[in-house]
Image 1: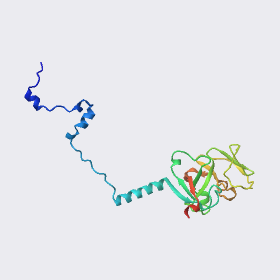
Image 2: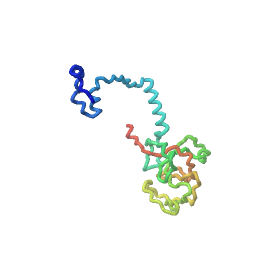
Image 3: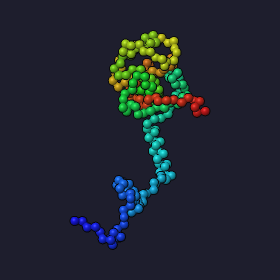
Length: 211
């Protein structure tokens, strides 16, 4: 049988505060005075040398993912004008092949290198056919796999050139400039090896943007 504490002991036992009926978390907060104080370390800000290293690393990563190139001719007019700066991103073709309609940057093929053009020269053209496609031109009309293509992006031209039908080999695409009357492209030197492509056009800046 439990015995009540004596009068002396009752005087020594401190009464519980009225908050002890609260949930555990609230009670702990009420009695937080007995908890040890935790000394949290202050954040360490990078030094100037660390900041410079970080900046250089970001620049290297950005250069690996994209680059800005000068459009040196009017072969892609009216989409791109001579003197525009175009951004070439290098990520897309890590995950998929070039598609019809893509505008691509590429190193010149061997046929042009044999004509004296430096291998480091980069062209920009539009992909019009992919591996396995049949492509031909009749009186200036582009036909892919027997279907006449509606090309709203090309420059107005009155040329009625013709190109014999051909089937693209594996690992190659057919590229042409949007300005068909002023473009050195697959019509002249044949299908482009996909391995020559260095990036996909993403956006451009006109000359006025830098003035």
